[in-house]
Structures are given as C-alpha cells and as structure tokens.
Image 1: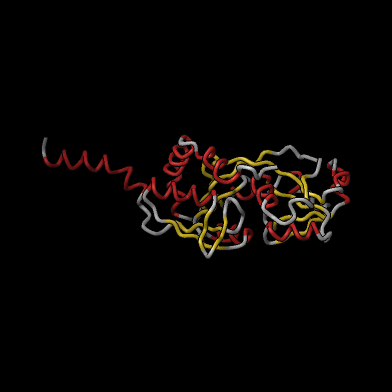
Image 2: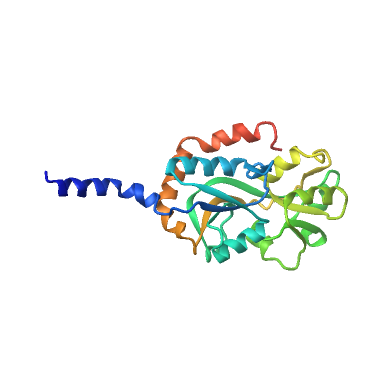
Length: 251
C-alpha cells in the first residue's frame, strides 16, 4: 500500500469526525426559566434540557454557550439567526419556516388548564373557556385549536412562574400549561394546595424537540445531532429524567 493510498483511507475514516467538528464556534443556545427543563440558579443553567445538551456536547465534542432570553425573544433571535438553537420546542408550522426541528423528540408532554381548588366546575368543558380570562406565556404553542382562537380572553406574560400567583389571587381565572413543566412547578410552589388541574382535558400530546435556526450553520449538522439524540434515548434518558426530577411531584 502506498503512502498516498494510506492517507486517502485515513481521510475517509476521519470524515465523520470533522463533519461534527466543522463549526469551530460554540453552539449558542437560547434559554429561559422553565423548570425542571431549564432552571437558572446562581447564573448557572441546570435541568432536563441541560442534561440533554451536556450529553450531546460530550458525545459530539462540541462547545455549548447559553444565551438567556424570554421565550418570545428567544424565538425572535432564532428567526434572525442571532442564536443557533433552542430546546423544549413544540412543533408548529409557522415556526418550522425558520426552525429546523431535529427528530426524534426527546420528551413528551400534555397540555392542561389549571384552576383554583373549588372552582373546578368553571372549567369542565371547552365551551367554558369563552367565559374565562386565561393566563399563558407569550409566544408559547399549546395546541392548535387554542393557539388559533382569537376570540378567547388571553393574558400573555413573559414566563410561567408569574401565572401561579395571578391565579391564586384571582387576577386571572385559569392558566394553560404543559403538564411536564406545570405540574412540577405547581408541586414545588406555595400554591400546591390552592391550584389544581381543571376537569377539562384537551387531550393533546406535545412532543418536545431541539431545533436549529435555519440561518445557523449548525443546522447543516442535523443528521449528526439526530443520531446522537437517538443514542441518548437508547441509553434510557427519559427513564433517568423521571427518576431524577419527577419522583413524588407529578399530580
């Protein structure tokens, strides 16, 4: 075998490695507070999404950098290509125009409404939504029928944590949330005896994805990230998450 042939073989073997490492810049990830998926403590990011990103970072040999921003602002930065990626994304057609979602999803949740204990009869059917002031997070996607209904009275705020005291104090009548986050936050709050899930269940399943800005060069490495997520899931990522974050908290 000649030296030229040997070098050619080595280059072919190294190709996948360099494909993953083609981008020398850190992967800029937009993040807000959304426990237990994203928790900000002492200016450090932790939670389920950080566990996922750290796994991907180690498996793929990439550097990650978190950019803190309110959810709606993060989406705007993705549209402009000023950040590279986000996690905890529900798929929506309008978002897919500027976000490339990475299959498979890494977690699944359901959409639920929350109400004050004792007021359950106020929200036992979807028709009663028309009578309520419903709190929600600005820019969030819950389920298409709700998202597209402009006739509903919706109070839009920057983050979930504000919704609990507003509902407890009667300033809103209900709020909508994704149970894998909302149940956790409620169970660990001072209002865990005052607020409950409403009987009305929209019966909506919401897979969560990571996604790349279509203007980011990182989106070209879709296949590598997809393969890495598949491996993380095969290593029982979801089971580990349930044990680490949810034992004794979900309603």
